[in-house]
Image 1 (cartoon, rainbow, N blue to C red):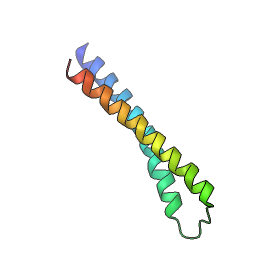
Image 2: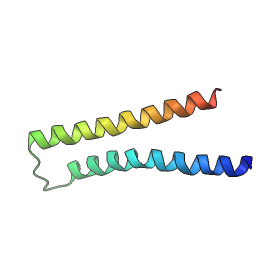
Image 3: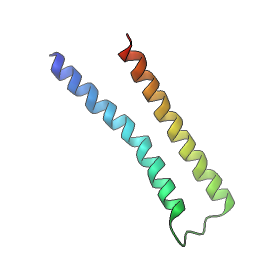
Image 4: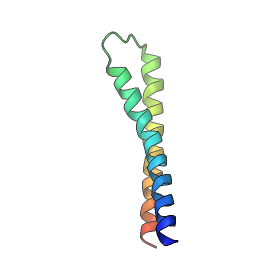
Length: 70
């Protein structure tokens, strides 16, 4: 029972961490692509999305640490 709970927790946590990471990596790579003619406004919007995804990840990590310290 403990092993199943741990495995479920790890699967869920992995999924929750991958989602914002995928967004961060995808948007950053897109902005680096040669020939991408992004306007300053588009760059700002994508930077805001990257920041939000990073903040989401930080919150997840902080929650994990809080659980681990209990």
